[in-house]
Image (cartoon, rainbow, N blue to C red; front, side, top):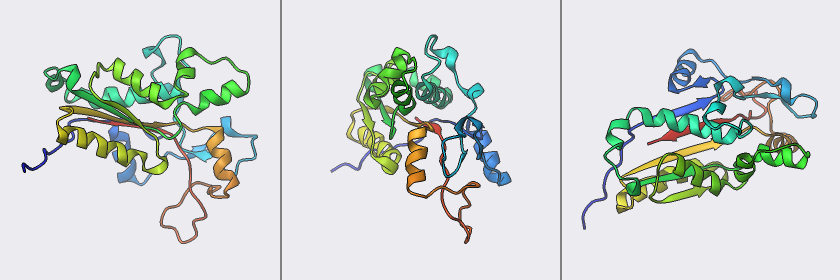
Length: 226
């Protein structure tokens, strides 16, 4: 029996509360700084904490999809994936679309769109479509000309790890030659209310490894790996 094929990371991308790209994340780790800050747009809801890792709107790419500025989940995923594809762009030109795969990891999809629907606010067709995470995966695959296997994994906190494992398995089994693994989740009132009800948020921002820590902090992010 032949050994399984090895997989390697050809490109990475991310957009988070500390900035767009991997360099801001590396700098934050080296300098011991955080992206947590109060969110004025979250005030007035009696949350246990509004100190979160929210992403400023000016880091998004709304112009990439005209007429869908409210599709926050889509634009975050798009930005991270575009970054991840820059380094291996030349090599990928030789990979047939049918040999490309995509795995999306998300726990809620565009949960913010559902909140707007419930409030009776206008919602664009794209944002409403991404209430179903599987359709977000389909649209990402179409945008990046992925015609091989496509899957959405939504399994709470382990979603990202499962998505990476699935991408590696596809390559090892010969189902694809290159796989995009994309993870995205946005900050929402639904999630903040849920963790508030559990009394698990740190009012001033989380303090990992501090003996006096009292909870966690929520945030939003998108990451992509080729």
